[in-house]
Length: 246
Length: 197
Image 1 (cartoon, chains in turn blue, yellow):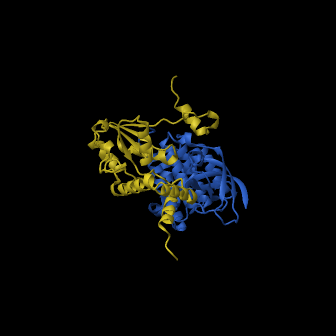
Image 2: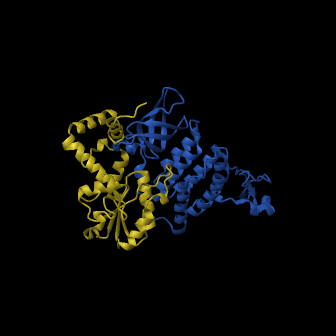
Image 3: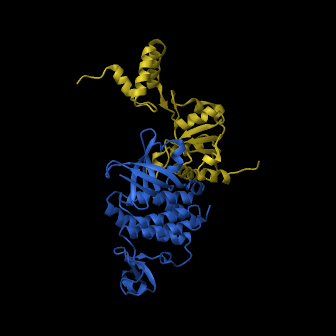
């Protein structure tokens, strides 16, 4: 068995003295693991950092074997993130969430594209939280927990959408909510593409996506709680919203 | 099934050491058995002594034979600087340079989003305690130039408070490094950290 693809490194764990088992999100083969011989050596460690984009050749005797990767760097993103707490915590959150949520070997080309675009923005701290929020919405969509914010679930209109149903993930207008408003989640305008997308708005929106990650996705996957890295990223954005950039 | 001979047992144990496999362990054991007087007996005594006395320094996490390692015990090293490293091997590497005259703190790992290693798994509370008891003015973060290492560095910087100077090791072109062979991340970091010549 052999295929060629490109992938974004989500993480890796050491295997023996010099090898690592690499966890990558590939363009056409979904999330895939494979052994990288010499991947733990100082010369290659930079290539297998989370967020790095690699050209991959995967080989195995049988399809269900772990197999091994031959890697070649396409893009390393270390320099963009090391000096930025926001980018680092965001990168960690996105990688941890992908590794948590995506099943292995199930093609997710759209998630790959969205993730590649998100990671290409690393280092641009002014727009990154907003881009991350949109990426989380895409992730929920791809995993079957998409938010339908096109029209009110009660009235059908597209005006004055102010809430989200925690059950269906559909938008609800102020008029449609009526006396049920206190049981619904507030819909931050930034999720509708409105407003300037500042950190406060993004923090509110991440609260909404976080609700669906914690209450819908995590129970469905039955793999424990959402990775702590997401909460740390949210803390960084919240602090920035309260005190401004570093 | 018969029990392995002591020599086979020794080979099996040696083969588990870093850098050794079954073949090289066999060669090493054969060598020390042949040099019984010069190597085998002293090696056995040294291993026995280390097994009985090696322990983690209660202050910094270094490995030595006393509860408080010589670096922490030395008043001359109390210069108000603490160098934070990931593990003991990093501490020993720093010491080999002879360039750092302060004390160390071994974290015992780095934060890892995928590995599930959180702040509670590292010796960060002990580091915070030391800031008070040792009148620390500067913390030098000598953590790996990896995503996990730098995430940990930012986390520690946040935890330490504003009245402490936080610095990190420089990142860039290594001695003997040629630009052609460096990844673009390293070159970018070196360019960003350039200085007047």
